[in-house]
Length: 143
Image (tube, rainbow, N blue to C red; front, side, top):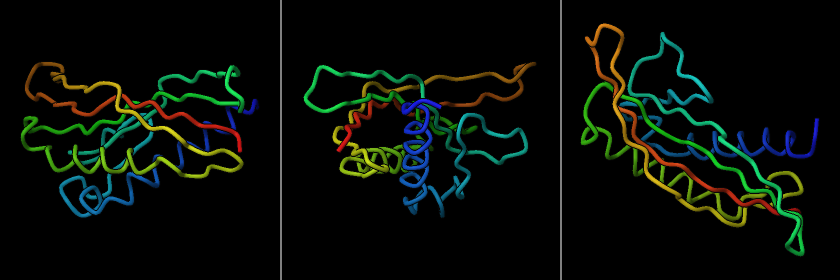
């Protein structure tokens, strides 16, 4: 495994821990249903899902840095308005990652790149699932 692969696993854990630190995501409608990658078909909704979209190494700075891009979203059967508290909790969790130490690395910059908001119809169109969240950029430097 490369350094980026090991670091990616550690950053995944930091994202998971940050999301699980939010009472709204544990005690509210999400009920702690937070998953990496895929929401199991048996999981109740709403649920939060996150995963790394990309990583990029930048060796032009004085310290070695890696930028990770994450998608973090809540999926529910209600409209966007019903997910406002969850969106706010996810933003708080992600912005809270700034300054987090991950092994011998530090998350020194956290940016919300863009919002994500789309609907997905179940096959047959009986149910419509709302996906709402954001793309995030996490810059990590070796300390």
